[in-house]
Length: 175
Image (tube, rainbow, N blue to C red; front, side, top):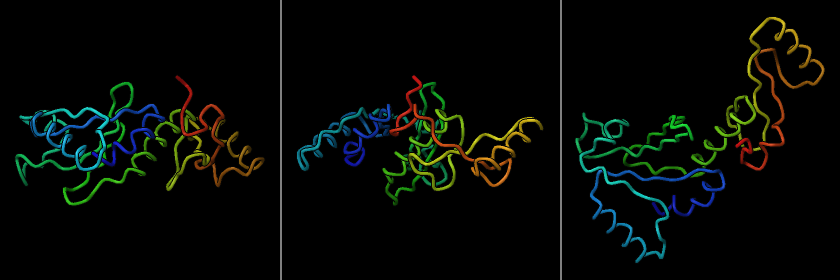
């Protein structure tokens, strides 16, 4: 909770909001938030939902019933503005989340959507994106010619394009 609060500004810059979910009670959440504040001076900046009966956690696959009926795994869901789950990252109880990767995934999803393409392996913000594959033979021939002229790929199925200007600065401006 502390690490996500520290990164909340970055998420907001990406037009992304944080939401916590726990099967603990609201009283437990209040105690955690207060204890964190007392010990660190950090105020948790996002809501935490109390899912006492685990209904939401079970629906999202956060409780491994073969291990426990009450212990959740540490899942991160990236849900878009249409309510569609775009990414699920599952961390076991003994492994911490990696905030920079979560931010990079949000940026990659936004960039791919904005640029109408895909991000490559190890993609980082402001790098080119992969052009969607051609759908017809004529588009394939056109793509091959484009690659020969621009040297922007290795074949018709893998070519790149620079990120459109409206997608620069780690934030898609197609609102």
